[in-house]
Length: 171
Image 1 (cartoon, rainbow, N blue to C red):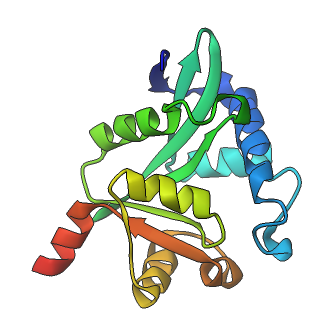
Image 2: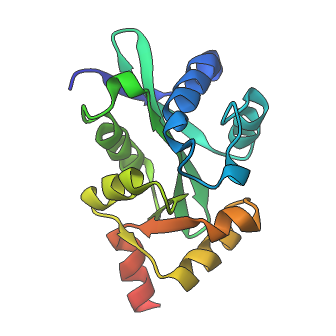
Image 3: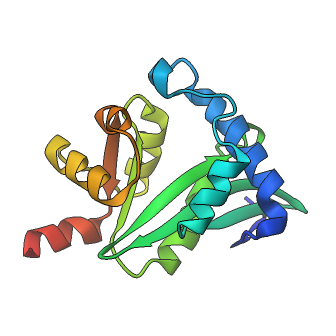
């Protein structure tokens, strides 16, 4: 894999939306129909996420942004948000490289939420050393750290890194 990771800025919004919406098509017909929308993410939603503290990292190939991953500090944890690689560039290590960039920025244990039916996403995070939390803990974490509807909580999972599990063992 060539390319580089960098912080995304306002000039990247259109490319970020194109990546998210192209990659999110994999969810159509997989996640509950009542949670699917087209486009999957609007510019207004992306701007709200950034205003709420989600900082995006991008992966460039040449001059083109081809992957994005957000990071959001939430007190005692850091959330991985909106991780997408354009379908034409998937399975090349870009997601792992973005995750490495996020890990280098995180000051607290990492959590990531995804759709329970998105087995490819769950497998990706498990290959990167994350583990699923219990159903009860998932419900608690999603309610505490994400702003999502109850229906999305019901149909999602949370994975945590080893630092989170270690902190729970001490806690």
